[in-house]
Amino acid sequence: MKSFLNYLTSSFLTHINIELSKDEKILNNIDIGKKPARIGIKKVHNEIYKSYPNIKPIEFNFVYELNVIRLNKQNYYDSSFEGFDIVFWESIKDLQNLTKESRKTYKKTVVEILKNFDHKKFGLNMQTFLRSQAELRKILHEMIREYYKNDEAKIKKSWDIIYEQNMEHQGWIIEHFEFLLIDAWEKSEDLLNNILPIKIAKELKKKKKVEPTHIKEASVLFTDFKGFTQLTEQMDSKQLVNELDICFREFDAIVKKFSLEKIKTLGDGYMCAGGVPQENRHHIFNICLAGLEMVEKINELAKTRAMSCGGYWQVRVGIHFGEIVAGVIGKHKFSYDIWGDTVNTASKMESSGVPGEVNISEELKNKIEKYFDIESRGEIPAKNKGNLKMYLLKGLKEKYKQNGLPSFISDYKN
Image (cartoon, rainbow, N blue to C red):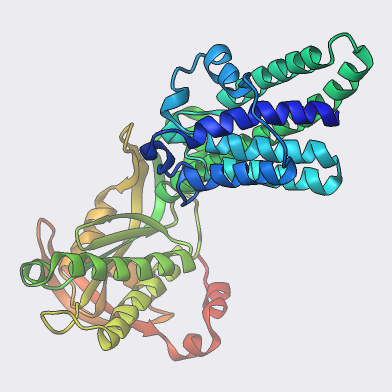
């Protein structure tokens, strides 16, 4: 086996010498990691001579044979094989030692090269790598037979060792691409679950569509920033978007905290709902607390952040509850949405609201007045709705504020 490794390394050295003679543009390319290909190939070259001081290249170049003859790749002289060079040299070192430590180092090298390799750039996939391994096995088997001629015992012994190593290498390739597949699947799942409620996402995956759902009671909240349109004319667009992002991230956290469902944003508007897509008997309390916390959060931001035009936004919040229809619209850029008079009324509560306050409907007031301090605004004109009784939600009553959320939930009878 030792003498065959000398022969194999001599053939490999022939390839490495050609690698280092290639055009500077090729050697300066960064194919793996952050360093030019020349550095990795030169390191292999130096290590070969360190391990085999008296080695000489031979005429037969098995890497050329593998890529041009076997794999029909005609760009042998137009690109470097840095990744292959590093990995194959590590395989030779492993065959020299045949220890657990050398195999561990070999595997680590293979995994690192696969991780740092730009698969998209070179159009290489698992099938490509496995085919290369299969062809490499064939050519190595032929080289063993040619080297040992008719000595079947040595042929078998050498081939068994190399075959076992090659098959382990193949297993590492499969593991790597399985990891990529699982990672891509998990990212896809996370993305879908960020776009749609989990229950709706599951239905969409299972049935390829989502049936519209009538929900007897849901709560809807809208927010909007006072004077946003005027501010867009005064503020730098980048700062404007950054500030909106900060505010909406805070709203997202509040929505999650109170088990609500974010529906969408539109410009400076934010919309969420409670009791959708799954029923929740406490949703009207959760959404009221969320609205109060949104106002509080914007007031906090106003103390610590200043816009280029001076001051900070004031937020209007409007809430209503009642029947809605929920479903998924669109096919390619689909979204979960809700419709109905309840949604329209909640929107009116916001647009007719007071900056820095939570404006609620009479129906909602009647439902929660035992638990919250509420201030009447009287009848307020609402576009396409006539005059509507509206109320400002001021906060939890003192006894519930002191005892926290569980006290009024357990006391509430739907």
